[in-house]
Every structure is written in structure tokens, then in C-alpha cells.
Length: 434
Image 1: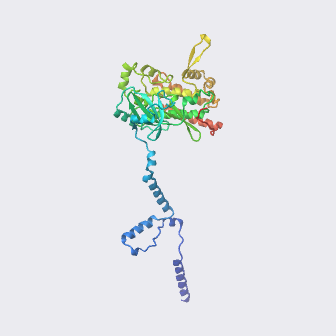
Image 2: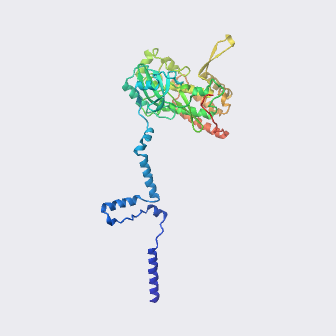
Image 3: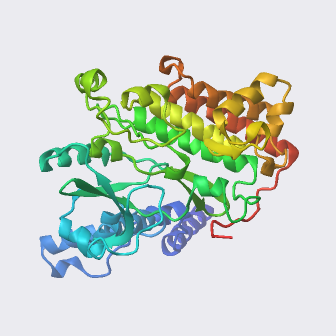
């Protein structure tokens, strides 16, 4: 009995010690354990006690605090003060500018004109806080305000990294003023052929030219097929001077297509098949050809009707330019045979280079400023892509979807080639004048 009494006393003392000693909490328990309020609830009503319970539940530590802070952060981002910055990231509705706005921004159209890719007059200015280029274009057919708003709402829904954004338009008399975002860069024609320094080009390596070709192919494919709209858009202004080469950090050159929507809004293209039949039957001689020498397909020269196949033809010419560095058509003075000028077409020289075979003539045709540093098999296939696009029969030309797929594969082949031979990627360049 004496030993039993001692045993019970030991149990009682140890239980008392355990009850008095604070328990250690694990990190998980601390994270989810609500802090108890130190204020007595007996002095408050039931509503105050409920508020205290809610407060004590929200004031947690560890992971509970993480979720609480995350929610508070989201609340801050969506506060009224941050709405302007959020609004800037959203696409704007297309603007129909009052002509007085255009006049005010361009000094009544008398400000110094911007040297741009377009043959029409253009001005760089600020409209509604945006740095823009305003292009003056001749209206080939009248357009009402309602129709202008309808067409703008469709065109301005198109968003692609390779397209320069159209912000809106204004109509005055026989002219339409198209407002595009200003993008810093140089047009592809000037990048390939600098009259001040013919031996220099910013596109001095093969990968830079493949990047330009890829950007153009996917941008034009988007215009033709991927806008998500019922309209079948035609660009009708694909040429090297309407493609802007931009410098993206750190060392990437990319291409962006300008003038998307111009043909549609100026009345250069047939809106439907019935109009196309009328133009082809009776009005084609009266219709002004809105094209550039060297880029116009045979059927466009005969009918004046722009289609997606005429875009493909112009794209093919640009690819041949990109590979050779030469302009589409040039004239060279010949001393032999009584003198005179000989017409030289990049299309014809490309056909001759491919017909010889063996790669020798092709290497002489490819731009010498690349210094023979490119995969010959890829260059040959790229030339074949360009020639497929300039087939005289429009039905034999590929659509831009298949062209973009072929160029994507060739771009990957070029990347593998560059990694194999160790082409440096940390070169520097500048789009500034030299």
C-alpha cells in the first residue's frame, strides 16, 4: 500500500507538471492556429463577440497570412487608383477622328512630311496622347460614316505582333486619313539597300533574315486566315518598303507589316464577288492600279483586282529580295550591242540560279554580304518557297498557311545549323543612319 501511494503521488505530480508546461507547436499548427483575442468577451454583446471571432480568424500567421496578403494585394491592384494603368493594357475602340483634330496635329497638313514607306503624304504627330503616323490616301469610292465605322470595327479587332496597329481614320472630301501607331525602325528596303553604304546591312547574318521571313509569313497568314472574322482580308500593299524592321532587346531584329486595312478603307479591293465580276467585265480599265512595279502579279496587272493570291505573289517577291538583297526590278546600262538599258528581275535571276543546280550559281545569287555563312540546303528551300509564291498561275500558288508552316520548319533547321557551327548571338547593331 505504501508503494502504491507513492506511485499515485508521482503520477499526480507529473500530470500537474504537464498541465503547467506550455506545449510546443509545430510550424503547421502555428500556421493554421487562430490567435485568441486578449479582450474579454463578457463585456461585449453577441454581435461584438461575433466580430471578434471573425477578426481572430483573419489575423493568422504563416500560410494563413500568405493567402490573406495575396487577397489584399489583389484588392490593391484593382483599386480605383490603378484603373488607368489597367485601361492602357486593353484594346481601344477604333476612332473616327474629326478632321479638325487631324489639321491641328499636322499644322493644317503643312507640317514637315514624314519620310515613310508610302508614296502618299504622311505626318508623324501626337493624337489623343498617342505617337502616331497619319497617312493621306485618295478615296477610290465614297464611304459613309456608318460604313467607315463598321469597317474600322472589323479591321481594328485584328491584333498580331507582326502588324502595326490601326487606331482610326478621318474622311475629308476625296481623301481618307489613316492613323497608325508610330513604330521606331527602318523599312526593309532601306535595311537591304543603303545607298550611302551599299556594303553595309543590319541584316548581316542568316538568322536575322530568317526571323524577318518568319515574322512576315505569320503576319500575312494572320491577315488572311486568323483574324477570327468572316471577312477575307487582303493587304494589297506587301512590299519591302512597307515592312518595318524593329530592334527588340537585347539583340533581336523583327519585322512588322504596315498599312493593314488601307486597301479595304480606300476602296482598292472588291468587297464581294459580284463587284469583282463587274470590275473584271467592264471597269478594269477605269480602275486605278494601286500597286508597285515588281510586286504586282500578272492577273492583277490585267484586271486590277486584288486577292489573297496577289498578296502571296508580292510576299514571294519580298522573300527573293530578302535572300538576294536585290530590288525586284532594276535597269543596268549595257555597253555591248549598241548600248541601252537591260531590265533585270530578281524573279528571273532566282529561276536561273535554281535551274543550274549544284548550289554554285545559287551561292553566287545569295546576298554576298552574308559571306557564305548560311545553310545552303535551307537557302535553296527558301528560294523554292519564294518561287512557288510567284507562280504566274494564281491557282498554283500556295496559301499563306502552308507557306508559314514551311518557313517555320526552315527557321528551326537554321537554328540547328547556327548552334552546330557556333554562330555568335551577342553581336550588336544599330538602325541609325550610317
